[in-house]
Amino acid sequence: MLSNMVQEVRLAINSDISGSEVLYSLLSAPWLQSLLKVYECLLKFRRLPPSPYLLYASGLSHEILSNIRAAPAPSPEARRLYNLLKSPHLQALLSAHDTVAQTDYEPVLPPLPEDLPEDEEAMRIVCLVKNKQPLGATIKKDEDTGEIFIARVIHGGLADRSGLLHPGDLLVEVNGNPVEGLDPEQVIQILVQSQGTILFKVIPNTPQSTKSQQPALLYVRAMVDYCPLQDPAIPCPDAGMVFSRGDLLEIVDQTDVHWWQARKLPSTSACAGLIPSTSLFKSKQRETWWSQPFQAHTCIKPLNVVGDEDDVKTNDEKGVTADEEDFESVYSEEAEEGTHMMDGVYISGFRRSFRLWRRMTSCSPNSWALSSPYEEVVSYQRQPDDPHRLVILVGPSGVGVNELRKRLIKLNPHTFQGNVPHTTRPARDGEETGREYHFVTKELFDYMVCNHRFLEYGEYKGHLYGASIDAVRDVIDSGRMCVIDIQPHSILSVRNKTFKPYVVFIKPPSKERLRETRREARIFTSHVVNRPFKDVDFEKMEDAARFMEEKYGQFFDSVIVNEGLQDACIQLFNTIQLAQEGPQWIPATWLCSDD
Figure 1 (cartoon, rainbow, N blue to C red):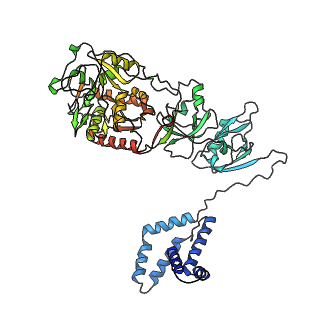
Figure 2: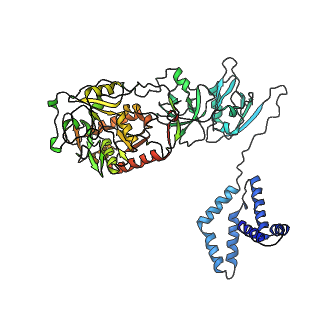
Figure 3: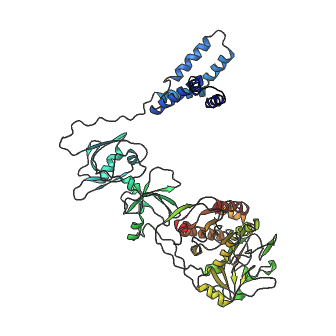
């Protein structure tokens, strides 16, 4: 119809017809009259709720079937209609339609009481239809007067959506039962036993424009675990919300200085839950139901825990030197090491990971204690001109973290690059500083340690090794994505606005899958070099993974289960691409200006 109208106007403009004639022809056109009738019908249904056209559609179908059967010679179309209407599925559909059409779904409200005293304060009669959703309000008792008040209205709950109950309203009756002298638990019991509608009689509190005073929504990441059932201070445990460290929370109400209202993202419920505010966390010692994240060590001096050099076996048959082996249960399917060259690009970091000295020493500029149970976060979309985010892989020894990092760099060395470690050992034949290692003096290494320039460092066989922050920055400044694998407690050293790290936790699969995938793999330890995996190794791996998630899960942006190296590598590649190109939640401080 609209297309015809445009065409008519175009033809009229190109002709010599006057404007009044064009307008008359348009208004009298049959298609425009039909369009106006459709528009009027739509307006009618906007004002009135839709109602079924027929209450007895199944009865009409039976009448049509009878007429077709009575016809002496029904046409082929009539016979097809007869078979269609007679089918069980359509009969069931029409029966369901009639059931819905004949049911009155409007709630039956009780009549308002007629014997209200004239000298009684202004009352409000609130009638709510009880359903499976919680009422969404808490009550409290004034210990001096014994009166019951509405303490808070939960955001998104039934009471909040009705707009009829407000904090501070004095509760007088519930379903005709006076609440004066009752305890809040007794009032709750009345509400639990009520069926259908609930009739409140309240004395309204002074109306307040709370919505205009409500601050903007706040998004935070939980840095602690919380269970309301274990918190004796929460006013209503049933209204509390359980969350774990790392969960994203949407704070929807902060009017109560002690108890905020929040939803867990992604939100599946309109009703919020109570959580302790930041001030409440800081003002009380509540160790019984929440725990702080593990506190990182501060620049512990290097220690040599290996023992005598004679006790360490080597694996020279495979070309692996003792100071480059991973002596802490590192899973590897290849004996590949050193620096490789692909298409003119040197790929460093292909030696086995230094998890031995990583366990000895970690560096963090400051001891990190819990300053807040919540970390404010914002949605961040990396722009094409922004530097790439640092990608951090963490996981228990033997799960394949280093192997995944190697495969990822090997997959696209022009995009991904590892950091080049520093060492005080002399360069060997064919090695170049800045390619295999940064070869430095012990004095320079000690200077870098004192100035907190290392993520991790340690000593092995009289030589110092370290992963420096400068080496990470060099890769990012070159325009590539820097991929490193470190111990979880070293994350804090680079968790800042400069690197904006994206942390991927590599998690072991089930023990059965571990046995299957590690059947031909080898393990390297400080006691036995190059031996098969045992069940005790799998158990240690699972325990270590569980410990890492419990202590550092709030820093993990993604979790990948290493069911198999090939599939895990593809999943890791896609995850990193999403971290670099898609929107992500990051700490709000990472987007703050330096001013």
